[in-house]
Length: 251
Length: 237
Image (tube, rainbow over all chains, first blue to last red; front, side):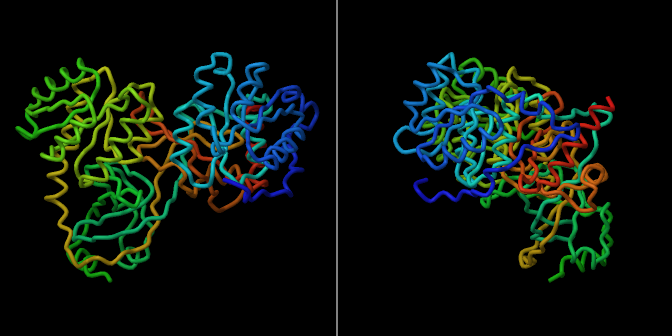
């Protein structure tokens, strides 16, 4: 990650989200809290500093893991933000060192990672990182993640009781392949559980008159395919013989 | 109870007590357990003979070693071959990750024989059922684009995103659309909101998956609406 970071400079001035209750004392919760930024690139450090200082936070910087460890031991910050990809010792080295340093164990760490690098993110979380930000990032996401992890009183949430928990319809893209007279294979980023009713929106099915209460996943949960998606076998319930034939010859 | 008599199950675990125990339990179910203590002998054996399923300990001394084994097995063996992982309940995110990368099911330590029995039944028997029932004809290979919709339960919302529970697992990093009356109530929009799955885990008590889905950080209007919805709800309490 050298030299070519895309950083959206227009967002330095991002404002803290407006409180519906008014803006009085909004900055108090963060005031005086210290964030340590570890990144070998000075422009990223400067940008993050500007964004966070705008939120009344105190910011310190380190350009290497060794410098960061020394700084953090001398005066543990309230939060650490570390770039995973640095020359010489990187963010993973920092996380490993932190695990061996008792005074830093209670300090939450947010890691910054390259785009779509799920493997690194997972590894960082295994090593104790609490959260992550993917580059290039917007100021709002940096601010929200920092506030969330500093347990900012002003970062608000709501927990539903089991009974009042609303349901959410989740839609993902899928490919349908390998049709048979009784069902088909469906590939999607969702590992569908066994014997579950699902809805499938597909033009070819609509043309054939299939309705949404007819799709039931098989006795086995989806399995991972080479593509990284999951393949589930779906049965079509209540198929008439003629329709079954049509389905098979569709396309 | 007898499942599929004399089928071999390969087990890998660095704990000798667990290895001994699981082989005994598998024997009770009519299955032949072969236990290994390290990855090298395990893979050497798997090269010679393909078992009916694998049971992998997730915590084999070093971090991620169980995950590496799952990943390698998924690349080497057909996807129909079941892989179970064994783990402590405290490893909820690691279990979900193992399933994301290709494991089929999980069992927790200490071993619950009944849970193991029902899971073995599901995976070893249903293979036969699925194959008998679905006769996929070659030549019917056309692909259709489709959308899949399922219902998730929301348990928490904060300014960054929502925490949901479901029987289904969505890979981390997936962008999904969420909709429903509750979403409309918050956004005031009659269209889905875009979220990205940022973390996944297992809920051991509820036997389902958990996921945290983050809102689009560039949608400032949505951010403001979520914030005022939460504030109103907290005031109502």
